[in-house]
Image (tube, rainbow, N blue to C red; front, side, top):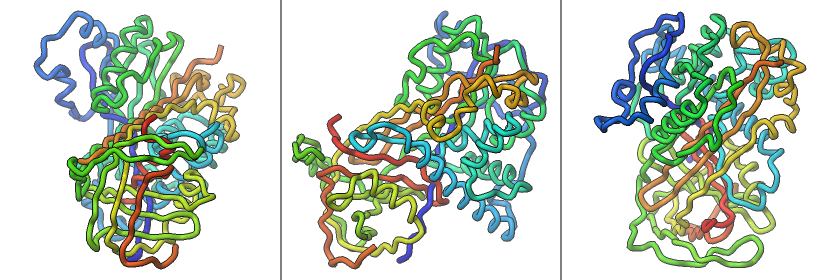
Length: 453
């Protein structure tokens, strides 16, 4: 059976916050999240929580209603799927180019969310002009999008995942100092990403930092409890953020009683003892093989699948992952009975995107010398990116997988082969994985060099 692989997003979080401050001079639909009204779910509030809530408050943003994907006529639906294919391929390429500058990835575990970074920087793209915009767009969109319907399809994409129960969620967030306003033209652009808007009292950076961390902790179900370890710089004008999460159960769960301590063979020849999950599934696991690796699809409930990639000898997991991502639509998977051994693992990664994107050729985004091309975002003032990061975490266990990624941009003002019928696939040495949603977006990808680290 031919499988066409692609990938899906994972971005931002429906961040909800509390208590008062000035509202932006923009209209809004009544899109109140219940958690904004009762953030502690009935728990007794404290003075510290009140202070944090007052330092960061939800503001109002006008969002025009658009036709949801489910209501699209067939012709528009076809156009939408074509746009999704471009989003999937573009976000993977942007991830590949970004991670190319990351040091020592071949020697350690890592997890990364391609869709989270891509969405965050597409959200940012509407606030810049000139050479900066051209250079960033060329990296974000190597295959040109139709300019007339790109934003409309992004809006439908975000609406589609907001309008249904889904184990993968993505949300976008705009935060701005209470002393300034976003440009009306930028808000019109950003509305297509369905962001939630917040004002920050940067005279109280300790409370603002604590409030944002609390929101991220809640929305990632504790996977990323402290995105900002230090207080935010009081000179920050705005933060653009995306959070992508996954909470998915395996279609066929591993039975805990079959999990045993076994050896995992590391790349340097040494071994470590891991909790190895064991499972044999008859004639229902999709498998493929080529000169780079063996590939197995482990489906979740719903429309998401994990692709497990066991590299051949002399091929590194990172090389096998890149080969897999570049050839998504070329693999032919067939059904086999598979004896699967997969270690339980937890991986956390943190990326300095300012450093990685500078190595990728986008150093001008982070230079005050080009701040006059970043004046469409806030009040027409000249800005530059002071910092940009992604933090990601994944947990794989008997029942399923939990994962989360948070990507931010903080700006400041300038002053395959045939195989036998039965497959024994033991992931007891370094391997790679890619979690792909049914509409083609890569939510998370990564490498496991040592499950115990």
